[in-house]
Amino acid sequence: MSRLINLSVLLLIGLVCLGAAFAKPHEEMTKDHATELANECKAETGATDEDVEHMMNHEAAESHKGKCLRACVLKKFQIMDDSGKVNKEHAVEMVKALAKHDAEKEDAATEVADKCEAIEASEDHCDAAVAFETCIYEQMKEHGLELEEH
Image 1 (tube, rainbow, N blue to C red):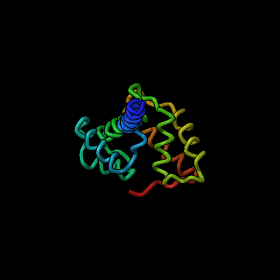
Image 2 (cartoon, one colour; image 1 turned 90 degrees about the vertical axis):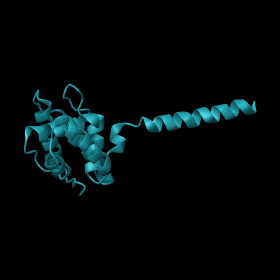
Image 3 (cartoon, one colour; image 1 turned 90 degrees about the horizontal axis):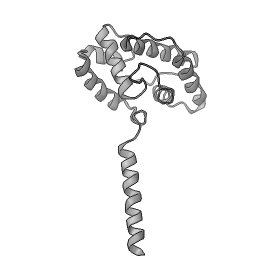
Image 4 (cartoon, rainbow, N blue to C red; image 1 turned 45 degrees about the vertical axis):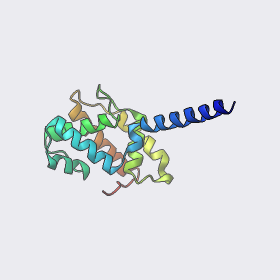
């Protein structure tokens, strides 16, 4: 009986560790992780260091490759799917991460994601990513949410 309990405890610990290893991408939405993904995407899209810097500073993309960099990062965080559509659940988590996790305005993150999920986006995922990003920043401002400074 003791061996069965020990085996059950080991199995439970293993499942918890496995769950942590496969955490949803939005649960790792930190500046360091975003920078890491941006650098991966830089290589994939041909974007420049300047494109990465603009993205990390919440500045407009200056080139199509810079726009594609943003689409790539949104896809890696699973905020945008492979068809260019927004995943609302992950978008809400992104808004919370960008907005200094302001607990008093918890509902605002959902309202922002709702509004931006509904925008008519381009079939070009790079342009769609920029439209979504622009919507997020504008809606956050309208809802009184400040961007986390990096």
